[in-house]
Length: 338
Image (cartoon, rainbow, N blue to C red; front, side):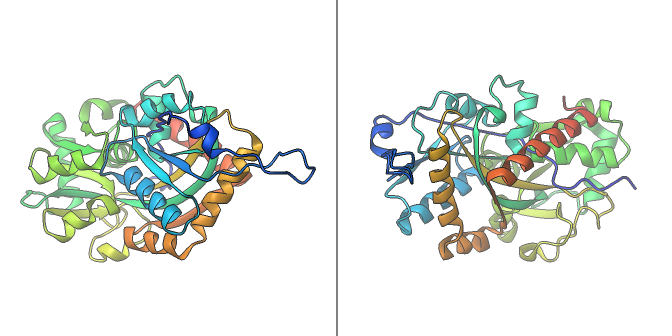
């Protein structure tokens, strides 16, 4: 077997919408230790979700908004969806954002999308604030699918190629990468994967659900939290999860490794801010997100959504992001997606 791939990929989205009048209202200098007003204080924050409603980024942004406002960590935390091109449409807008009290949801999916979309704006142009969560992916099929196991599905793709359609998140994202890694493990040469794999990308989780429930595609890949309710109500059947260990909410579903393919891949999510903000503004955003993370309400959101706590800030998050970008770029090249 080949070496297990662990939590490599990231693609997806960063979106920022300029919110009229926010800059003057949100940022109010407070005296620093030297009396020169170097500290920052934000009454409100804006949350940008660089994807359409219904997916993991959208769930993350709305969970953050709820906790921030319910626990009175901020006065308001409005969510704006800006979908398109794996989050790179939103990322381009974030580059022009003038309000420092802005957080954009992003993660593994965006890392890959930047490469596959040849985005002029990169994550290196933003200000990293925090990694928040980690989540396994799940491979599903429609309720009445002919596929009973992951092996049934993968072998049919190897045999029939473009006749078998798989849907998921944006091109080059975690879902797309997982599909490519499965074919590589099944013996398909990396250079042949793009022509063999018929992958239908979506800018929001709701679109993938519609395709699966409507029997328009053969299979789908997404975060467990995005498909869980449809698995539970019988609209979809889960074939395997991408974590190293079984998922508690899907205890009867095997891991991909147990299903015969040596692949482990989890999807992390976090938040970044505009690249132009000051060190004091970054410190204040990190303080706000840390207070949210430490709350009982956020712990409850993690449990409800089935997300794993993966909190990182500061230099540790900077180092993680640099390493993840390098890993994802290498993986995308290895499996022929770029």
